[in-house]
Image (cartoon, rainbow over all chains, first blue to last red):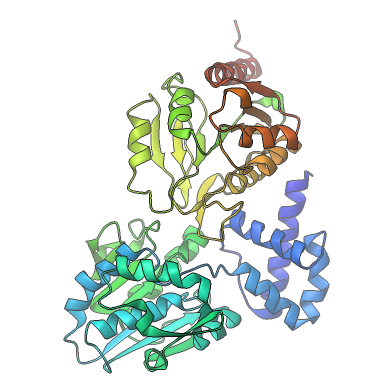
Length: 274
Length: 206
């Protein structure tokens, strides 16, 4: 057996142990990227072989949380891909604006930067009270940071540039206070946001939504898991509701594709029509 | 799979100077080139819109496409990493993308592509490192070498930015250090050997 094959076997054993002990199912994650993250975890935790971590993972829940943080990609930024937010402002909000109440699901929100971006955007569109954002992730640590809404000051420059490129109406600095080396998002932005744990792999529909945003999450899934998630989104969206996925992801090959029409191609925005 | 059983894929890493270097590698390759060529060219995160794909398509015979997630890899096609995404290769030879943190200050990173490709293709991989001002790709070249694949580096003296091929040459025993114009020729030689060996296996060599 070659080294690579042994490592693949070790990975399988690890994922099986995690699933049986904690219920997190990574078996339908794209493996190449997962393997890089597991290697990173080995380096961080001073282990040489994947299987060496299994006994500790089974008994030590804190150690397991550390693994989860490594396995989940939380890289994001405010108004990431500003052209997408420009399209949301121009093509989605005008249609949804007059609904009596607007429910938005941000699936895989990581540390929450893009959730605050959405709240800012809705505020600027004049939708103050009659909306709610459900921001979910399976990584509790990331969710906690999202809830706090405190981000490194060094990211403020890129946030400001992105905000301007997204056709922001005022100054990004209106939405936070800086303290030491951090920026603290304004409290009023959080009022209509619920941060909650939800795992796209195992959890189901929890409400009827008008807009679902899930970007750069499904690129880590294989076709089978992607299809599950597309069905989940299809079942969660009301007719006329919108779906926005990552700009390198595609709905085109899904069974539910026929239920949608394309609203903006490059921005990967779709509308549920049946 | 051993060396004599033939090569399955070519991976290329290039940074500063790639606009000039890549067409010079790809242009001489014929339309029936038998392997897929998978490329990471460092670009500006927002330098998207398929410009580079069009640029290369206008200059070479092989079809150049931007890599998408879960895409099956086909022989004779050139896949280019999209801006601001890592490009990886799955064990079952599908392309995969990732938005994970930059590696060597780069996304896409050459190491990320090369290391995952070495996992997927083992000794059936040909790795090429070209001009560039960083050391990205050196670790990846070492892994390709460790797995028994073929490593080719542009001769740093002929590179617009010599740092990247230099770093690779320092990191491992490179099989071929060549000026740009000799690389396509070497690729054709290596892949012709593939055709020869496979026809030998079928017993129909005349």
